[in-house]
Image (cartoon, rainbow, N blue to C red; front, side, top):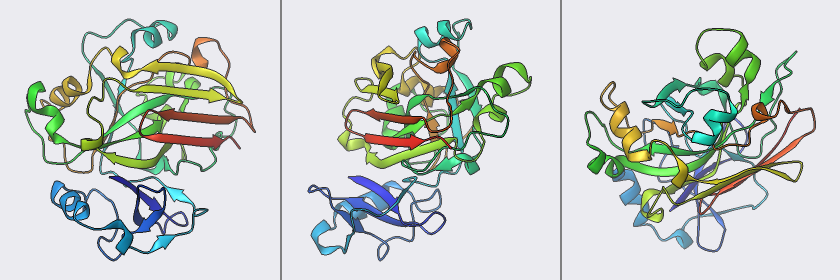
Length: 275
């Protein structure tokens, strides 16, 4: 299934994208897709519904982030070439940080450059949504804990990240710095999350074009690793790192009016304009 949230910001409703590309309203079935409602039981309930029985939604409706996650966890430096372009040593263990949930935005919402920022940067990433309580899970069983996948643009302000000291969360959490979507694709539709092309362009120029096969730490290892230190909960979202080609590598950053397009095979595409 391809699940989504639609409507004005702050008043989104849950929906799904049917096989014909029509958005269907699920608000009579579930109140919203949040950490409080997401579960494997809910997904099974939704699979039993005939999409044609649900009200259709106009195609031009605004899309919000497909899920309001509980915790928003992130993995850094998870592609060798990206670590090298950033001038950082390859990690021996996954680099873990977080984004504030107020950074969440829709897949086509504008991205606001913070006042005075000169180093706002782009990062296409595969995001993983946890579907059950997960503690001390093995790598072998880790993917069974995944509810679905979506696309993330881990927008970052490099001055805040590198030159201001402290934790990376400061660079990652400005409002609008976490566009998600356009849909949450359930795990059964992604047979191999380590074989997905992911890409990002700025103003039509391809900047990032890689594969999740190039991750230093694959998704199963990331989930198992995190679960040794914390209990992952249904609705938690994990971004899994970005491939090379970010602005940091060449000292070229986003300017007002730039258009970012990005996508991942089978998960859809997003577009954001900077303001």
